Length: 338
Image (cartoon, rainbow, N blue to C red; front, side, top):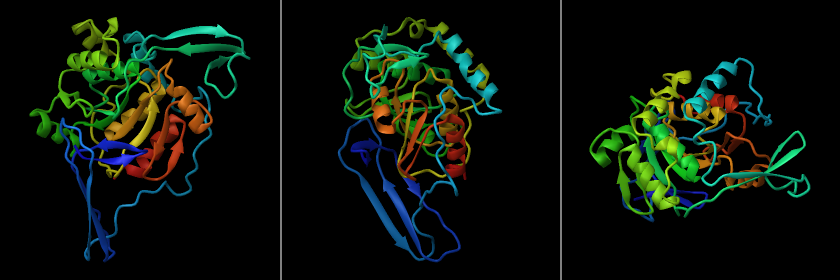
């Protein structure tokens, strides 16, 4: 499988062709010849051709006058309260699945026990130390083709949060031109979710099968009860979407970036869900750094950004790094919507 190099990680991608034209005479047409399959690969084929009848290569920049907002913990932007409440309904129907990493434990400690530069849950003078038990870590991000409004896809995303896995998501909203057709090419049918593990060469459909595979390969083989109830799990996963019905389902015409965005989030967060809906609707590939409660990646984000809060977006196509869900949504729409 071919891919592109992002942050020293080889990211496999399906074939993408980007061509943009305007009134200018000179042009560069960039063709990414990348093959997606169940087989891992260590190479990338990128061909750039210059012609005389189109414009230069696509360059993505932040919106004019853009300035990343300051993070505000648990703050809700005016006019967005009902969006957040709607996105929170899933936590009730899904019993909080996807909020905690496998083996999660918490204990109250003295505020002096954990240095200020170390992540801990600190609320009103109370300090809570959180830990978890992780299984083997995949060398390369697992690829999952899915969309936000699919209850079967939600089941898999919940397991991803429990196992604290980093995933390269290829959004496949209805009507999207790139990755939805690619799934049929690879597997023979348009059914979601569809997983490709470049570490083992395994590719598969069926949410329950994917959950079992991930648990055995990257966990201790245990599947949470809330993901083991058969039809009841699927029904509650569907009910979890009532508050945001129709969101994250349909394609919005967008410009496809050359590099996947990097998104720090976890399935149980309503603020992260609001951003994920737009990432999916715009068909924007993204590496999700899962960081549910108990995840060691909470410390990684604290060191990287000087603050822990999710969602957090890093866009290698523009250099933008930012917190705050409502502002991230506006940024994505202004930057990538066609």
